[in-house]
Length: 226
Image 1 (cartoon, rainbow, N blue to C red):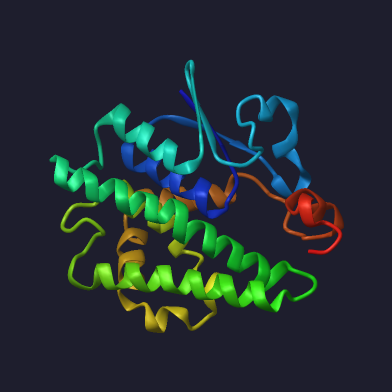
Image 2 (cartoon, one colour; image 1 turned 90 degrees about the horizontal axis):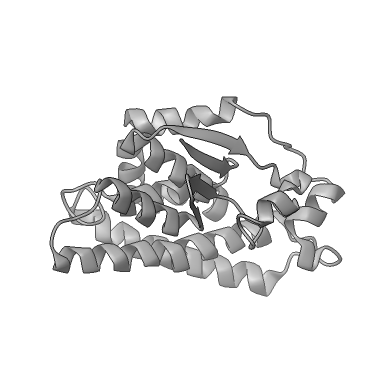
């Protein structure tokens, strides 16, 4: 059985969706990052980066959510497009999520909601880049149900994890100008696997308070000025 180290943030949740979509048996192992559990030596032995998610599949350990999606798709042969041209598209859009949507949305959340000094330049910079990436994806989805066309793939699974957070990252009215992203999110939310993944919220009570202890663990490099 796969051991799945997770919390409820976007990257672990897309892995949860992937596991559910593929019908794989897994044991969810909570890692409470606001309590610093990601820095426990037993966990950093699995993931030296001290982040979630990580999976352990017998003698195989994989960390980074997009690496996990590729590993699970390769293991099962599911949710991968057929043919080299489409495979190129799949890798391109998966990396677009991995290196663009995820990091810029995540940093946008940090500076919008958690930076103590306001960080006006950084807030504007990350908000602009997050919005720019979401606009590109919205345009991509304007004439197709899924990112690669008619077929639901791991790219859509990767997008779902972050699309759930669009209002928090960009503002409550953000979906008004991202209608195709919202339609895509709603379609995936209606899938039984997404509902099962969301049910993980009831499995463990993660620390909710962003107190000084949590800030110290979450923003270690900036704990004096963030």
